[in-house]
Image 1 (cartoon, rainbow, N blue to C red):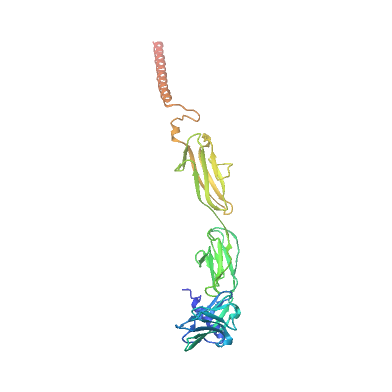
Image 2 (cartoon, rainbow, N blue to C red):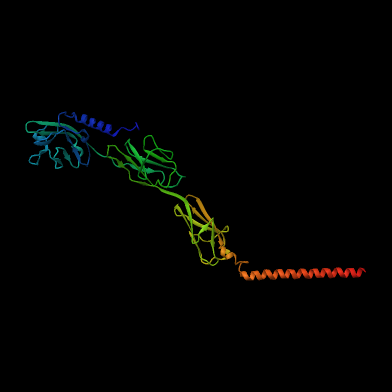
Length: 372
């Protein structure tokens, strides 16, 4: 429990006690009474002085300005049997009595502050109760200021100040009340909020005061421009990528697109086999895939405001079905021709070996003849 802040009910009772003392009168204690919590009103709002402990068979309710229930002080009266209302000399046109005997004052003004006496006539007896109404004026909305309006996520701090004379101040980030934690600190006088590491979800700051219970006053929203990212980089292609490899056929059309979460919008760069391409957009289209377009591609996403960059890469390889028909780039042979090439190569090798053996035997025979 926060012991530094008074409880609302206790605070209200202190205000009511002070107003009663200022009026110079204490609440009259009798069978009927005026609810003490209704004796605090706000300028410009409706005030209802609630009459309590009223028994049945009431003949007339009358409200009077001051501590006396004389005819000269009467504001308005209500007679339940005939359901008639009658105004008195102190009637201003804003007062009325409900069917339960409570006094309603519309558009309360500061000069409505003072003593009010309720008189209840039961026919054979009368009772009265007096209370002191205090009309207070709401203070203006608090002002708010921050030392920066454009920040980088997780890098820049922000300090916000609430301009108010109130001592009870609450802080709101993205319309949610906050307190001191490991990421933000509220000063001991509650008038300064420091966010040590701003996130992308801290876009709106507000402070709120509550000088009068149940009537908070909140400042206008203060907007922060938070730059963040890039993150959540995703790569989309027209062909599926498995283990970082995109398989495509020669001559096919290949689409590649990079996406990322970033503020402001990021810049895109592409590299092919380590060389920077002249393309600068998020998409690349290869209308007809060629051999020289095979290799490793990298999409680089850069945010110039946060000075951060991320990338995704993959490799384009020829589709497996193409390998069985490839001897070298640009030269294709069928399977049958490959078999004939192998047979011819083997026969040629056999013939060549026979010729070499014949020549070797002939050479040895000639040397023997000369030796004899």
